[in-house]
Figure 1 (cartoon, rainbow, N blue to C red):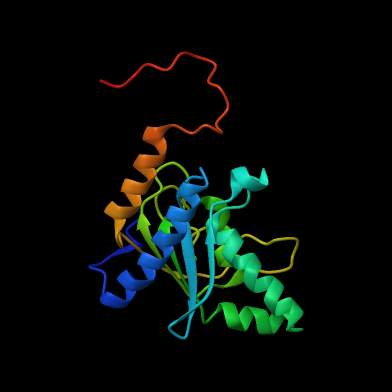
Figure 2: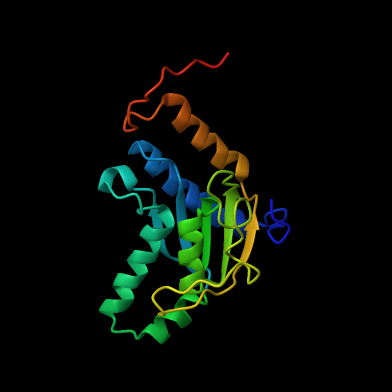
Amino acid sequence: MDSSVEETVPETESVAFMKLALEQAKLALDSLEVPVGCVIIKGQKVISSGRNRTTETRNATRHAEMEAIDVLLEQWQKDGLTREEVALKFSKCTLYVTCEPCIMCAAALSIIGIKEVYYGCANDKFGGCGSILSLHTNSSRKVTCSGISKRKEFKCTGGIMASEAIALLRSFYEQGNPNAPKPHRTLVPRV
């Protein structure tokens, strides 16, 4: 794991917000989705939440973080906020997510300018906050999205209630994913 991701003992506030993210992950599990959930906090208040909805929507981009971001973008657009005002609001927000954001989500969080991210377990296959890439730091290559916005660094802390997040993921994969494509080869049961 990248050394720029802090590993700390979670404080009571972090645990309380991560429990809310875990509730979203359980909703995803109940809907036969990969159990990842998140909440976005501003001023010690939950202002948005999300859960994986890739199967339900048949859209691979509908990760928990993207769902929560889109709720805010839609609301702030209805409120008539400018891009600058939206960016200022995101710069004061903290995200709690049960699993390390993937590369896509970490890039999106960087582009919107989120203040900080707390996550449960690492994402060893697709992690964008240290496991595979470190998109939360300025040491990563700069990325622009059609010249609209440059990436911004955000603080990232992992390991908060990781065992609970891992347990949810294990339960999903142990029960099997009925929505997964049929494998091309015979799966060998683990002994």
